[in-house]
Length: 159
Ligand code: INI
Image 1 (tube, rainbow, N blue to C red):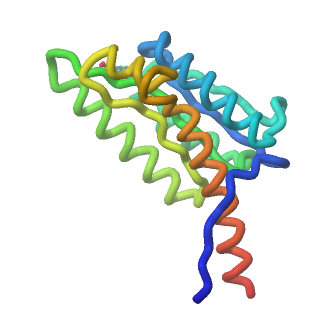
Image 2 (cartoon, protein in one colour):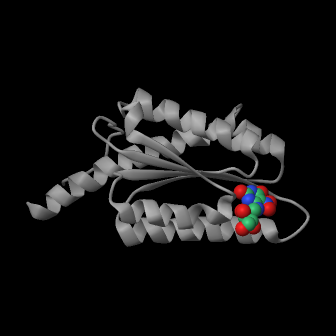
């Protein structure tokens, strides 16, 4: 039975990290985690572009432009949506994730999802380099693994 799995191999990969400035103390830590994961897995520093947008709501618009440019093997989307007293949280969190999923499907470009959706800032900090790891690191690794997997599956299609 043939089995396929990708490896997070970064050599030769061009990656765009798209990140929201809202809750920047958190999102900068996610960027740090993503950069660390990418460079430790072989992505050249000069092959990583970091693109800032105002908030998580704006992530899909920038991600769509980046995917359409055909310059990148994968994207990493980072943000921190933290619940407030209004339903705005739900709208931003849901539409950001849905928009990013649509773009990944439309362009066959892996998008690592590192958009935190948390009840409070402490939960977010725990997931941005704290006790629960760094979701920026996780998203970057997933993006590299999926880029490799899609390559392998495309080769399998042609064979
Ligand atoms: N954007 C976030 O990235 N995180 C949030 O927690 C957040 N909240 O809670 O409002 C948020 N809102 C801003 C939104 O992403 C847009 O930037 C804004 O609505 C302008 O279009």
